[in-house]
Length: 328
Image (cartoon, rainbow, N blue to C red; front, side, top):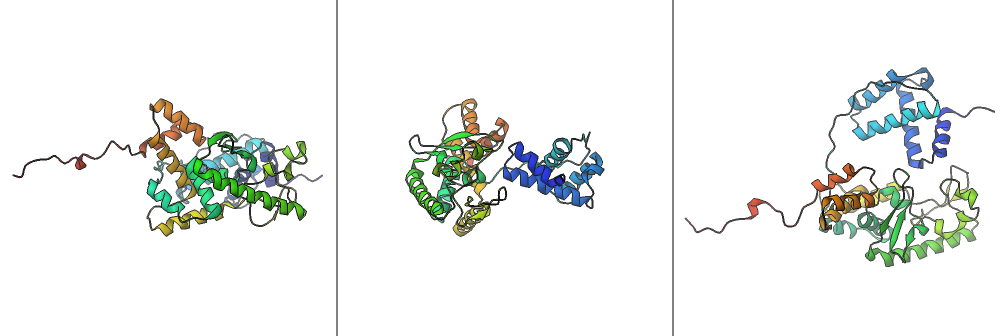
């Protein structure tokens, strides 16, 4: 039996380790970039020095951010240590020294100005990202069974770091979301009538529960308008909406408001965190861990950045406190 190609080995092992499809795509992308940078040499013929030159090239010539360089490093280390079982040793390279910047945050009026420019499912998705602090893909990967209207909660399953968390469902979104789920149910019934209706499941759930792919609870809350071929099994299924469609809708909504701020799905998440902190009551050592759990951050330091963005209502500028003095 012929041994799978190197990138196929990367995909197979990453799937076994339950890495997300997006992570697998990113790993394959950076490994391919690494190989092409060195004129298509096989990684087994290269080592730490070649890895270091590639990572330095990303900073000095491509001007990438620190997080992007780290992403490329993780992909290449995964290739050598996990797939090829080779030790790289010490890697010397030029680190990205650009300091992290504060994220863009909208005012409450600006949030509503953006939401007012959206309709139907786009309004719902933007509302969930601002109302719950969801990441882009966490929103798109919601399944019908993740929404509990009885307890008014949303469960994020397999979020960043493959972690689950439970979030409160905003009351304002409950009724329109319930109506949307009913529409999803009707669409799913039509797919089944047409001989389709199965959906991709995470891990080995499809083998453990053979009928689960056809159950409504596993269907995407925001399904695509067309069926597509699942690359894993070659069957026609209905996937969730593509992230680029939602990104475009929110970006265009921001432009139509006339504001100069750059509006993206992640802007809504940053704005949720900032506004939540402004409204929260209690000491920082109590409030910050709560926000950390809501956002799904691994480290509290990541959450602390929002302390620099809040605008406490009772704190202003001394310029606004003009004394009342007699005319001289």
